[in-house]
Image 1: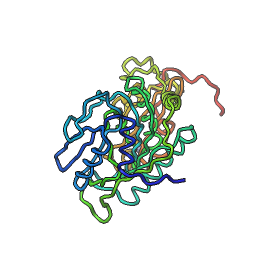
Image 2: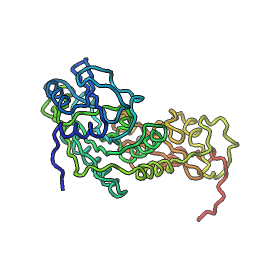
Image 3: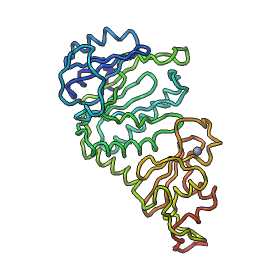
Image 4: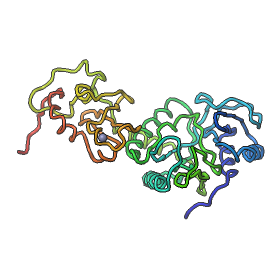
Length: 346
Ligand SMILES: [Zn+2]
């Protein structure tokens, strides 16, 4: 059953109900203005005064208690202003030239990708999210209620890193930056005016569909997903700069002891750490990428006691694993800390 198209007022009513106060932000060319509201009627009236020009956004999460003026005065919300995380936003944005709207085909690809994520989370007992068209991409918004603290930040980091690798590539990007607590989001029901409108790349109305009931995701489900992705990239003993690497072995190496960072560095392909276990690298096959200067790159993962992982987001590298890099470079044995001990079926 498809939920009914929600009005801007419906969406804002949920925001006030869950967050108490809401920031409305308006962009007109280079000019930005901000207002804070706790009165739904006055918020909707302000939106109606601004909606014919520029772009409108609202805050996603619940700020700490504050005095509000119910008019366009105040400062933009910062991460530190947020007391409670009440939304888990997922944003699928088609990769395309910067500053332009999406084509119909690009939107379709983003819709499919979003639906894939929602289907996976349904299997994990997550409730239905709000579905939305941002105008240029598709969103899924889950309700939750978690304190804005280091623990929640850590869980979100694991979830967004894991999902970005699983669901993002160089056709549809999974935006991992939307997890910051002070995030603002497109106000649904208003027009997304990005770049010049052309027949192929028109300005579109954003829209959202709110399920009934729109249930909160239980904390344990969020914890389970976070620990699933954290385990996939469990800490290893490998020193980040490779400088403390032990003696290199000769002959057959045990790839569960492969110093993947030192190895990529030796090939001039190491870039930087993303977190303790995930590192950005240049893809060895980058010359074959359709978008060589795209914003997505390749990563390696440290897996304690197991082979390290490799993943490139580019379509031409789909299915390539660390085993393909081992074959390509041909010198992985020399970067292992231990010789291979197991039997060989030859
Ligand atoms: Zn690649």
